[in-house]
Image (cartoon, rainbow over all chains, first blue to last red; front, top):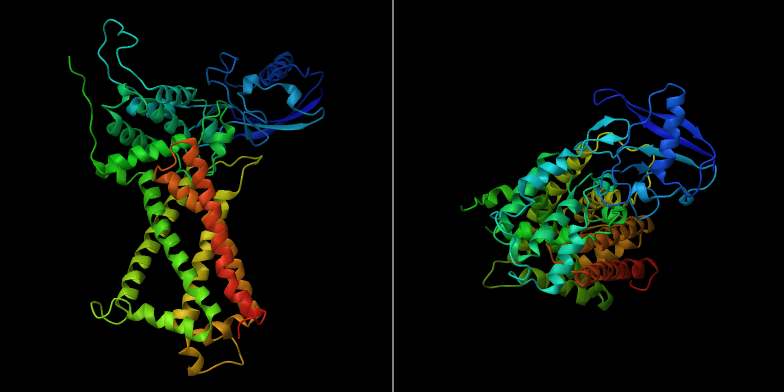
Length: 245
Length: 235
């Protein structure tokens, strides 16, 4: 496959960036998107040019490190992470625009790499349960109803990649936060801190400069883990309960 | 050792984006209830002049003698005005926050435009509301050159019939009702989602359906009287 790539290049956080055009040829349809970028970087290295900076880690779709806006779609046209996206999802000769996640809360560090520390700070604000350390408790010590366990697991699939923020017209992180809140709210262990958690996390979310939710669902469509919009409803419900004091 | 659980006052929750959304959802539900009643009143026009004007007069005498003349009407108006202020305040605040949340836009865009439709549609509806109130409540003027004067102004039925015999006036109304239907099809669902009523997949699908049904009922119910007038079925 031969492709034309328009890639966002930005030397550093304070530099202004621009889209640069590159051409790659003889790309195998079985390559992953990141492998295709690796090929391009090999070419750039050989020419003595600065390679393109992008995030990746596990490359098997479970860590949430990679994430690119590919021709206007977070993680590209398939429902998966960028590392698990393959070039067979594109046409030969296609022009592909590659941009970093765009949100003020996710400042660009370099090229396609953004700082998602805002997610960590939201988790620090309340996305945890306080338990005393010691011997591991008996697995069945706290009974959890099956539907609650299933929903908690479903929400816990969130890998914090940030695609929801990137796809949201308001750059809102409600799907991420909804997943984290639902994950803990469904379980008995999450109950003692339930109200304090939701208020602290939403406060931190707003402080980081994310926008509000308009319930259009672009987040769920972009989510590589298919987290549904109803987790945002659970988040809203918990916040409303906290409002009543 | 006991672990520390921080507690935050409920007051902090009120200022969050979700707090604003709850304000928007609550006031939105007031409007949904109101437009359904308004639609019922409009359909009285199908019953003829007496049916429509009796209804209009009854709105003013409802609750008498416990309430003064038009007392209940003013209670409703105050609730609606407060709701409008709250709804618009929340909408514009969130709109501005969302604008600030992504100052660098994408070069390639492939996203649904529903958010933009809600916002600009809402602005259009606000402008229509001003026009609509001037026309039928505040100034009560007739846009129909053939039908002018106090006999038209003081007769709600005659004013409505005279107004919708004018095609351009009906066109504005049709556009506004289509905009309202789009606004409500998403807004009705969105309000339920914001109030946390859709926390299961089943409830989520039901909320979407309710949104579409409300929108369909509103657009059909509101367009029957003016179109009947325009095409001469009601004279």
